[in-house]
Length: 532
Image 1: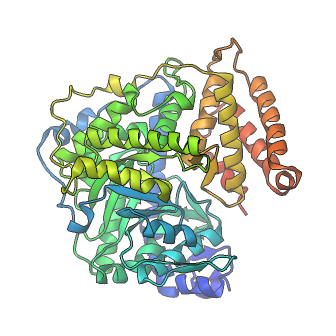
Image 2: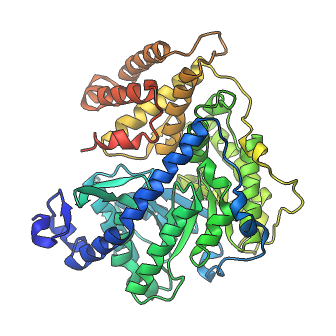
Image 3: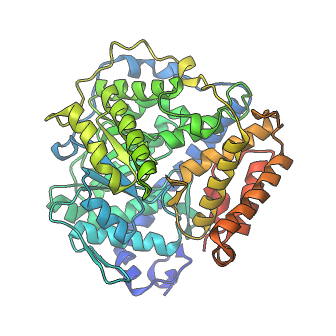
């Protein structure tokens, strides 16, 4: 069954299964079409504005606080009060909307599960549809899963709260077209989740709660504000029913936090330190600035001055405005090796203790096995209080643009370059095969960490960096190391797994986007063409 039977304005390139027909009803499609027709044109203008800002950075300008919005930053005002249910979010877990993952995450010792349609999901049609069906079942309390071994997974009686991260502004949904162009992926995710779940969520005393990723400017959340308002009116919802947490995971956005909260003040409940994407954005935004090149990824931690300033400014800004300041993701995952696992737990404990001590209201983990240790640190800091909105950070010295832009010092090494290649190669292979969240070398890698890996190498090549052993970083060196890491990976994985995978496609894509004269803004854009 194709679109021509269902709707005469949106074109669906995939036939619908019986299960998918439950989601893509004429009414749901009508709502999606209305959103697309009303808001897709403005999205194109917002993306063009992004490109224009990046051109200025490439020509030597640096991000800074906007003089035209000084009054917003200096005036005293607050966002709409946070609903009671959302005031305590001390530990959140994230992951793709995979059936087993969703059950385990909602059952974990956490306050919130963020179902991720963005960095953790390779957006094949089947995964998008299965993800929406899974979340609908989760909201209705009917979600279950039986493994091949016969083990049954079911939701406990009091699962964590559910939030939905939609795709970023730059991502299309290629399986649905309007006027011969792919529609915005974020609108697709938002429309289906809201349409099918809003009534059931409200009946439970919950609500349609979202995470908004990759924001670069307040005008982009103003776009979402209008979408939220339109949708609330469409479903006869009181203003402010739809709530959002905005990820501050781009370098331009850190200079726009007051403005972002202001534009979304009826709907926003907090900002989040999306630290891995933030590091990627630092590299990408300042790609042409040869004096702001970062070292090996392994040396970039949250105690580096530029990242510590980012975290503290976010806390100060949020709490001044009555919004929650969420901490970042621990990408480490538990290990079966006792010594390695002890090290992992210590690192996670130190990271979460630092966030809680700084004044964050909550934090992220990627694995249920880390929930207890994160919860213990925030329990120790918060006690019986739901959050740390009382922590003003007024005693801090003013955080300047110079401090936010100051690169961290450290070495660039062959070992670090090889590690970047391994991560990017394995992640790309998994992603174009339909898997967006992959354990690699003891870390849960998603698109953000893969982006750091490939943009670092691009920048090192572009600016002719010298490694610690004296080697000049060139395209030829990268290609040699890529070939060597491919051979090592083949030996590690075995011939059968290697040949059944898409490593050749992944290597070709990585070589292309790492050695191009122009830096590709997101690896998912060319990668999308290779998805099944």
